[in-house]
Image (cartoon, rainbow, N blue to C red; front, side):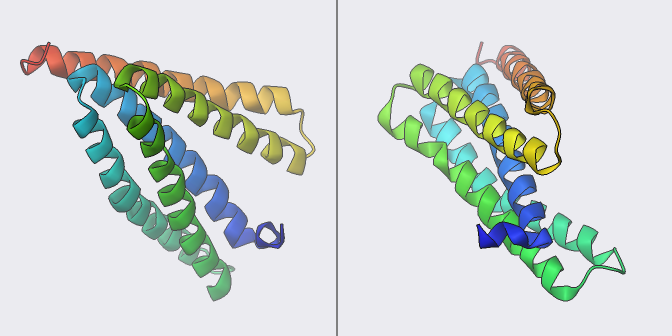
Length: 164
């Protein structure tokens, strides 16, 4: 993969994909727990895919520009790759919602998200000559915490604001 030979592209891919997955599965679980509405979940994903992808890309852009040793090509490579990775991974979660009932789509989305986290973590560990298991366990553990918190926030919102 020639794309991954660029430090900026590697930064953007790992950050964008991870952020796209964690943010989107958290949103799916939370909105499902709070609304049980496929419309709300798909709408949330579409907003995340655009607004949060652009926000994260700008954040990476500014962070990379803040480093005086980073060249212009690296900054833009990280920016564009972050946007594309986050957008594409986030939007991929719409597919199960279009094909399956909401409850099954949530499960399929969580499984898809965990698979992406495992694969990214594996490649990250291998690129750093680390043991993959501990890196994978750490990253999946963080994702599970996000899912649990998102579920309970959704339940709390539904109960507090009349949907429960």
